[in-house]
Amino acid sequence: MQNPRWMVGLVMTTVVAWGCARGSGEPAATPATPASQVSNAAASSAVSRVVFLDLEDCCECTRNRIEQSWNALQAALSGDPGAPPVERVHMDSQSQRAAPYQALKPVMVAPALYFLDRDGRLVAFLQGEVTDAQVRDALGGKSIE
Image (cartoon, rainbow, N blue to C red; front, side, top):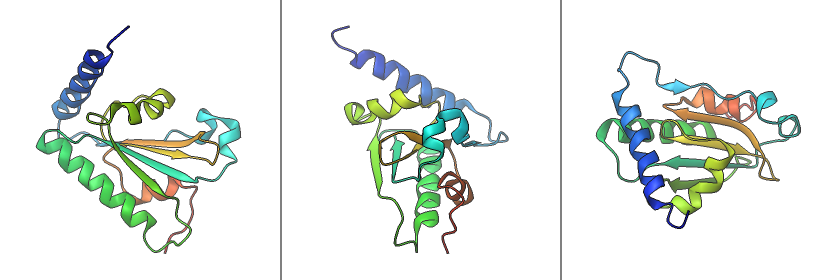
């Protein structure tokens, strides 16, 4: 495959359409993947980095979901001097930077939060509209107050 850009565009269009087509009465968040289902080695590792994948060009409902999830992530990390660094990547305009994370776990609805250990292994994964409580849980139940 010489030019995968058309495929990335097709996938992104499908993801955005699916995310926007969901009824407002459905739960918006996808629960964290239990660490035991991701990797036993990763399960015992602490989160050392968070990657937040979102879309730069999207509809209003997706933008609202992204903003709410970004705020929840910031709230969960605020006040913790040992909080892991966060990298924010736009899947649509920074597809090469997003690809390695999407290879770890595909994104069904934006945004997606990847919680990685120091070796880059996936410890936890959240997507869709998330709460600060879900983020704290993904961080390993670490109390951030």
